[in-house]
Image (cartoon, rainbow, N blue to C red; front, top):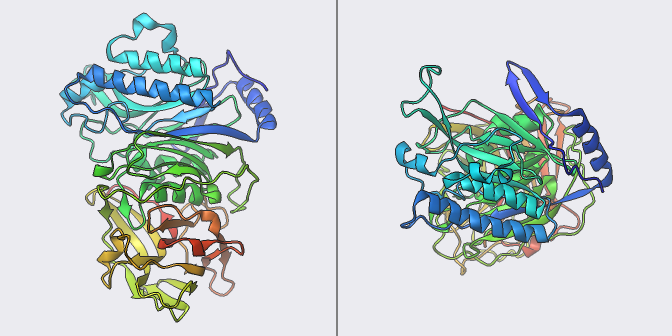
Length: 527
């Protein structure tokens, strides 16, 4: 197997107008192609991480305490021959970072230039910057790529930079990547901040890095997943199909728990997604996983009692083509983690569904039809495992704009959903289900949605495809492989339509359904 032991493989993109400029060594490209021929999978780990709390520690003690925990996890991953490990947003600083800029800066470090190897310059990396030294050395010792999220300060001078803040420094929520040689090979500054007053909004970056196992990764962070920039544009414009995604997500029912959001994004864009989540269930934050296109979760964790956990899987090195939507690959069998029911202290956000169209689902009828504002329609066919089911199922349909972050931002989506609710009210569809509830089981489900909206390219090549949001009543993912999705153009109307149907080998009857939704995402922006 070829290893570029002395080679730093670096790729940097930026846009000037509509132009994309890329720097990458020709030798690196050639070696990457050689690696591609020799490997069909890489091994990845993501960390569900419960940080060490701030308490009475100084900022330096907080950072170093968490990085020491990181190093132990890196060593564990290295012992399993992992190629790349991803850590969550705020894992080093903690989510309890002071909101005041002056106090927050005590937790922030300057990020060195690309190619710098902090482990080779111990005397230069002291104080809080020692975290960079320790991470760089850990990458060398364990021979893997490391993606971390940290607070960055970039000092400036108002005399030469008229945008320089009054405290003489820009603050960024930043992902940093170390290669196997301990070198810093990429950096991404979070573009879509979510109530983060400590940080400045950066210039939009399209950050990627190449690896010696033949895969180029894109970077984005948490709230960025809602928007087209930069995440979807990395797929559409740069052809990236593997992503590292640090996050400190807050779970929302019934469609946007962390694991639902992660699986839906990977499927809709037909990519591999390495999602590392911050673990603090009492603020609604938990959920990490490794996802691959329509195969869904290769491995994941969503368990309020898990604490810190290393989630590992083989990931296929696959060339996806958006013109051939569900191109399947062969891979070793790897089942998703079967997690116990959540503890009661997990906090949830609940989506406001009042603008949706909905109707009860009759367990005896086996089909329902509903439109939202006479423009977007859903037809469902189904067979319940038992016609004696006496719970509350609803067909929900929505086509329009949805606001987020206290109505500062928005996105559009089209949703056709079957929801298990606690009672006749729509609000109860966003509640968690007590263990004693009458839970539905299906033998068969088909959902048809029409017409679909398309954002990128034409209807035939759009990267943003429909995907499934699937959850059972114990808040485990229903495998996306239980369904097949088709898109087609109606020969009469010319509209693009979609259909999701349980496969002939589906075991959907084994699952107690909370959410089965076919979703077409149309990305948004700042209001």
